Image (cartoon, rainbow, N blue to C red; front, side, top):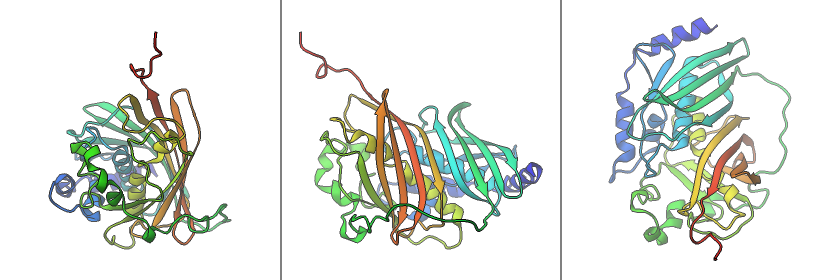
Length: 333
């Protein structure tokens, strides 16, 4: 029950977190190649010594000036996983972003066991900095069991999307346009700085205001092999990745762009449902679409497919898409 979960967390609290500090240094080093192992350490958390249900994660500045939402979600999931134990695997998480995170401050994750039974366990976690909440998440876990199974739709290759080996990397796409990238972000879009190999099926530049259909797809794979057997790590890494590009799908049918100065864009809520086992060091394709935008908010849905056509996860995100009034936008007279 919950008491046993607290006992497990109390044992974890004796472990220090020097690896997280080293990971943060690795992820911000200007001249080093960032490895997948560094990202694994970055999305991990360490127990807080004075409590059995609180953990701390380190922040990394990717160049945006605020914490990347995927980092906070992945670390919140890590906190829940450490509390619930290895017999349970996450099958769904849902979170709300409450305010932007400060990259110069650690993030504290306070967990609460909502229920713990033979088959399912639910954990709530509150992420905060300096006492102010930045994210609230609920995650549901399940013991492995067999049951009815189906999936609807075609995998990415069966629906005609290009294979990842036939696509340039995201760094290759950006290379001819680095002059348009703010200096603080150039490392983020370089080949060395990203431990994930991202390959968009179609490159949509963040400054391109062309109108497109609200659909896109991105292949992803860790650049380095990951240790076998730790399903929880792969779930954290996928959670980290799914915050990338999903909201941008909702912008595509509008004459604006993610880097347009007048656009205020931010994630409001995000969910991931895990259907089947997968590995982040094998190719996955996030196929995204946006069915609606209204009220200054965009909504997008995603499906994560393995290269061999298995649906491994589903995603959803709602985000703020507010275009501020400017001189260019105001009518004359």
